Amino acid sequence: MKKRPIAVTIVSILFVVVGLGGMIRGVWTLLAGRGGITRHALIDVSLVEITSLAALLSACSCGEGPIGRVGCAWHGWHFTS
Image (cartoon, rainbow, N blue to C red; front, side, top):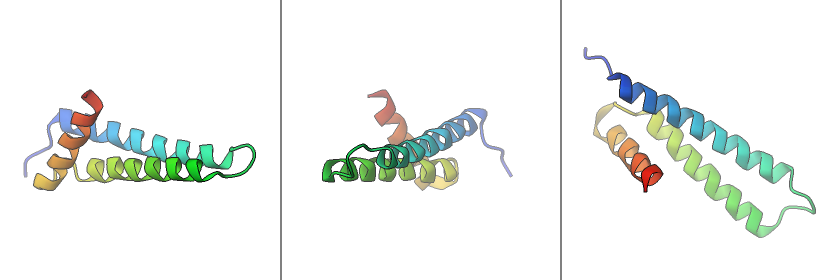
């Protein structure tokens, strides 16, 4: 069985950190909102949570076949552009 390259492992760890950080930030922003929860804030937090979940899923499957590699490439392209 081949081992993952170190670069893939580092990218996976980075995606896990970014994904968890985004999820925590989204919930924190929603809970710490002053003056109630607005529709705009709810949509914003929902988009952050979906993107963070996508980062976590691609981190978990990074290097595990073509689907994981496509997810990592997609996120990498969005981070650099």
